[in-house]
Image 1 (tube, rainbow, N blue to C red):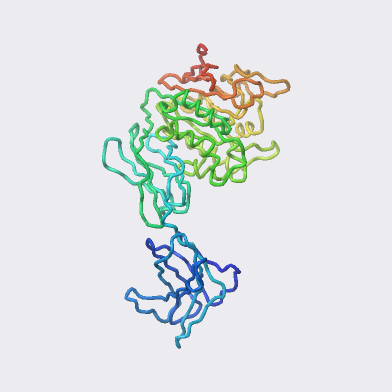
Image 2: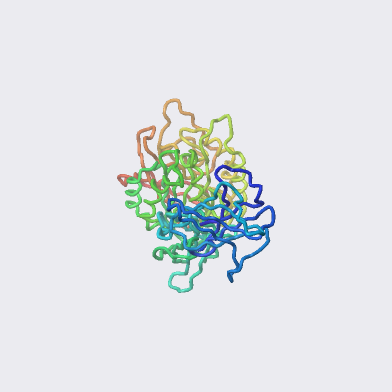
Length: 509
């Protein structure tokens, strides 16, 4: 039970109090109530009633020393309660005893609190999964049945020395949340680690390791070859997602990229229920406890009454919904393209301005400058088919940065979705090699960008082709091989190789 202020239900004036009472669980099975009076009283106490109990179940508790002697004459008062019933609700009135020993009731309306039910255990109801991969970091995410604190036990695989990392970005252990994101830092590059979630039960003050040890491996700049999958626009189709993860062996990847719109509706449920139900649980079952799940937000994750719950589950150690990481000679930059907005207004310009400044800092970093390849991962890219407001905004904020021709900044590839059509336009070309424009469609691509754009398919595509697709990315020292596959049949739709200069080589399909 967390510390909180208690308030009378009718909010009547509290002329007798200078501070409202606070109810705090000091130790397991022991509650302390503290308050301050506007004038000095010889002795303070409470009259306690359990809701639903017989009328005669009333206790008076007075302020006492540890040696059971009464305190006298003061403004600060507190009482200690023991023997409370699990899961019960209580009401109490504040009392004072004057110099003549007469008891006075300070307020007319009782205060209330709920006592924890110690018979109900805190359990993991979702996850854990790993995300935010890096050469020296990883994040672990899970969900619990009751609000609790969180930590992660981590050790190098094959060793016994365990380090416990608390969830507390502000230096304070938070115990009020159902979602828990613990950022592990100070890890070694290209190294396997075992981890397990730890629940902190604030009712008992105990840290409880939860579940078995699992293993992940940090990324390495020295890695010569890697394999990843990119999927987008599944729109809550868990069966299709499960089939695709199984068919293309997501568990053997170095990481899996989700390009947004993994949920169907923007009418989100409280506490991110739809995120878990529509793709996270399935991902955990197939790969995400050991292989990092990298998520970029789509417009369906970005709109709706409870859309802010997305960031409770997916955020970087800096608190952003965009991030970057290095694997081998490749820098992956995951951008947040935001929600769909009318052309006549900007959507959260401060958000995109901050994201632009962040991208400039990333591209100035040594990790970015020493990479030979740079891949942008987005939901809605700078150029689409059809092209809309969301694409125009991405051009406005990011095109000049993505279009830098210098070897230490050049992007070779942009992976996206959103349009529900398989699309590829090579750098410097003015046409799509897959989907073709429908009558009246406006195309805004050509030689104005120096990177190849590839978009995955999605349900109900405008051209009737390739609903669910998977893009496989295989990185090597001198090229990246990108293969688009039909997610249902496994048929190869498109395959190319791109070298560090951005040159595209068509591969046999």
